[in-house]
Figure 1 (cartoon, helix red, strand yellow):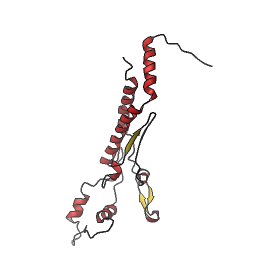
Figure 2 (cartoon, rainbow, N blue to C red; figure 1 turned 60 degrees about the vertical axis):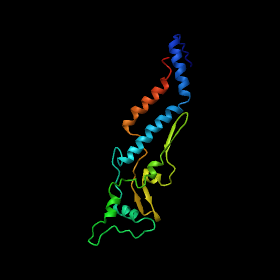
Figure 3 (cartoon, one colour; figure 1 turned 180 degrees about the horizontal axis):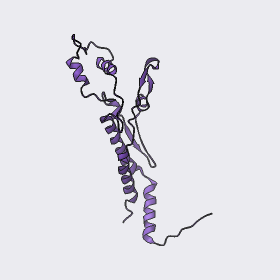
Figure 4 (tube, rainbow, N blue to C red; figure 1 turned 90 degrees about the vertical axis):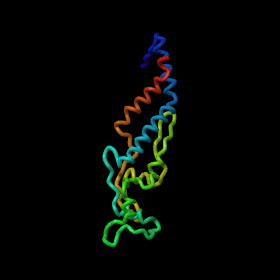
Amino acid sequence: MRIDVEIKDREVRHLLVRLKKNAANLTPAFRVIGEIIRSSVVKNFQEGGRPDKWEPTKVRSIYMAYLGKGRRKRKAYTLKGGFTKGFTRYTSGKKTLIDRARLQNSVTVRAEADRVIVGTNLIYARIHQLGGMAGRNKKVRIPARPYLMVQDQDWPSIGQCLRGFLMKGAQE
């Protein structure tokens, strides 16, 4: 069964033609939407997880990072059992998943005609997003800390961007 619709209103036909033309290649709109999402992901890192806070990094992990890969001769503890000034400085302001912000800064956006892809190519990104067992013999449990998330408050901006792009030139 086929239904044919004939529109005799010139303005409505013009609007539909413009909508069809604008919808054919949404790359510019997806580029903006990608940046909205990327900004939201960066905010996820800065706030330590949204809407739910991430499980904090274990003190032992922070301690091992402070010592470094070569396990240099840095001291974290004083003779009295307290923390050294250096270790205190190192740990102050520490945020979960942000050491050198490599993961946060690796998030990229690729806009295409029919979609936007937001992600990272770092090999350890997946384990932080989804959680799981890692390390030698998979003995270390990494909690899921979903950072690649679109927040509820982002959707109105995304919708407004898409509507604005689709309607661009439609009122001419």
